[in-house]
Image (cartoon, rainbow, N blue to C red; front, side, top):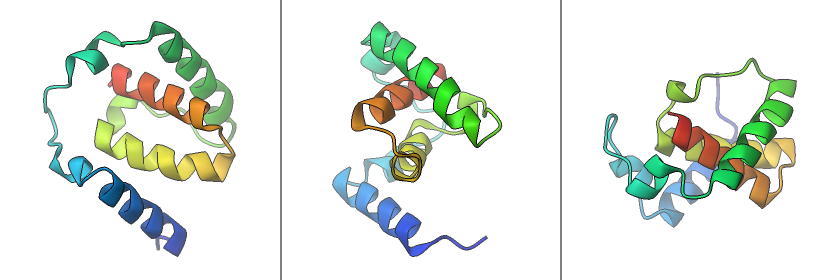
Amino acid sequence: MKLSKLVVASIATFSIASGGSALAQQPGAVKPAAAQQGADPAAFARGAKAWAGNCAQCHNMRDPKDFRDDQWKIIMSHMRIRSGLTGQEARDILRFLEASN
């Protein structure tokens, strides 16, 4: 499957904007304490609800463990545009995914 120019540009922009940190994260790396503890329980709950309500409309539900945090960030940056999520919705869903994997 070919990646569209938009997807490639989104990935490149994310990688540059994040200082390449997504490329530096290794599988099995220890998460920061804030991510492990779910710094904002309300964001986690909103993210779980938005994940179920938005993502399931077009996809079979994926296990959050299917991807690492750095991969979910890229996926969410792309899907935010495709699905018309607000910035807050995308951040909440990402919080849920990161805390769940």
